[in-house]
Length: 320
Ligand code: SAM
Ligand code: DTB
Ligand code: SF4
Image 1: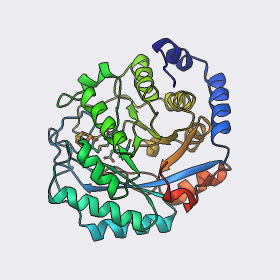
Image 2 (image 1 turned 90 degrees about the horizontal axis):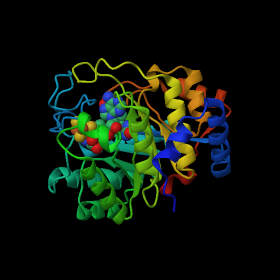
Image 3 (image 1 turned 135 degrees about the vertical axis):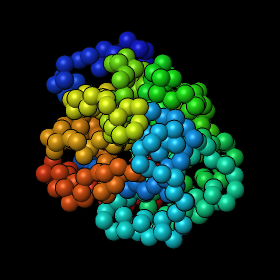
Image 4 (image 1 turned 45 degrees about the vertical axis):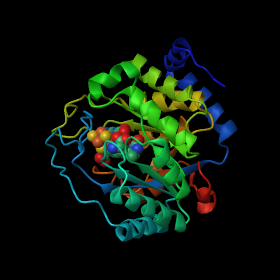
């Protein structure tokens, strides 16, 4: 099992971009020769009013962002959205709730029903609901859930300046509960939050040293949202995103690396470089959870022009 050192990861990250891309591409092609990009659709099933204070998040009740607490969606609405996503070509449906943690009761039971409904459509199902204990994870696994998204977001050190209401260890504990329940792990992070290159490397190192490694690694570029403490952050250099994806690809050869939030401010060229660096999934559909995402048609054109193809539904029944 890999156990990467700080120095090893930093040495990878510090390579000049083209040799780094060569290596990432080589690793990518030897583990993912199919040239496929998985399309995943996100839906916020419970928006806003979150008690956590994540500095990047429009859904935190600590900040005045214009995103307010809404009622939880009903199961029928969610299944109708999932059906639409499937018709448009998505093979994975990810449902998000602005919760600090899962609490047993009717709201959680409703999520369980949503998962069952999404699975009945033959889609992969992923949820992101905040912290979770082992019993709750087991309940989701029994409903057929394929993956649980819970991002580390940044390095252990930088974490405390981004989020004060929970710890990095809380995060790792939930990932452990998810893993023990037999659900695949989706965990990644965000760049553009004032972190250093060391923070970026440490985040990737923590993910890559998990045993087993996460099956899914979303790499987000901060979407700056007015009202959040990070609203005025300098936009990330797209080549930093490329670099981050390349290092993730090399450290986690088998994982699906997802080019996640932030694509609306990237050129087609930058997105293609991300795919060259090893990204083999995007969020598809004109909305992420609360912020915009590129139009479906533009994304299909991008994939076609890159000579790639959308992953067909065949693998959708099995977990990534
Ligand atoms: N409340 C749950 C949690 O925090 O795990 C689930 C929902 S939360 C919105 C899921 C992830 O979205 C966060 O971990 C973060 O990585 C990402 N995210 C939230 N706001 C973002 C933003 N403005 N830009 C980029 N990524 C963001
Ligand atoms: C992830 O890493 N990115 C997605 C998904 N996992 C849940 C969420 C991005 C959210 C971007 C801000 C918003 O739309 O609210
Ligand atoms: Fe809440 Fe998740 Fe947003 Fe943090 S990232 S404020 S936990 S919804």
